[in-house]
Length: 363
Image (cartoon, rainbow, N blue to C red):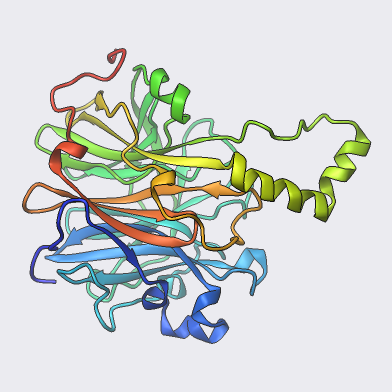
């Protein structure tokens, strides 16, 4: 792509899933059997790249049904003909399933990182370097190893490069930043570098804990990043219920009834928010948008059930952020685990808190 994307502020574009599926994967099932969502975007060499998750539905065993692909987008945000790459087919040493890719650039080097969901305990995040011309994996995937105590499942580290050095936002509140050593061969060791306490409890009380999302983008003296949060259904069955009730709870008909009710009355909801942090160590947060940028109920309702989970959900899942030449922002996100969406926001909608401290301040 030799020209910047052209789209009016507020424009929302749902990318047709059939245009994103590599031709070699079509042999597995018809296009309508796939779920394509959680797209990440980045501008590199005057091109707009998009990576995304492809679920094969229920046609394959659970441990072989999720992959990543890439494509190029033209100036009208349409998939360039012949640009779709079956990225997962080129990855070695990176596990059987590849979930939720996101981009990282370090100098002129291009990377994608993804996770293996529940395939291992603890799960694993992998980093793979790509050939920027072919968009295929250039080297084997490398696991990210956290030198410290971690949770059994971690999927949402936000990687970014500052002054040529790769870092990762490990946690948003408190703001914990890791330093990545990508120059040594083998596993990538990630060591705690900075920790800043700040208060995001007001937002979290309404919309859930702040979790990772789209990798940070530098704008002058600050970084802008998107995160996701979620609120759980209020009426979940108590896990310590008597054995008889627990048995009924596991029956197919009862689960179907619960799913139907929860889908309509109280689904799990994901939101997409914005925060900023200083572009100098220790990378202290400087702004938190008080309301979500992305709201699940603003999107078209789910079209069908998915194979990704059993619990009904309303999902907006931000994975990519690009600042356009006119100052507007292009956001890429998944909706309801079934579609990939691009949306343009005016500068003030993303950067509305310029010079404003987060609620509670930072220390």
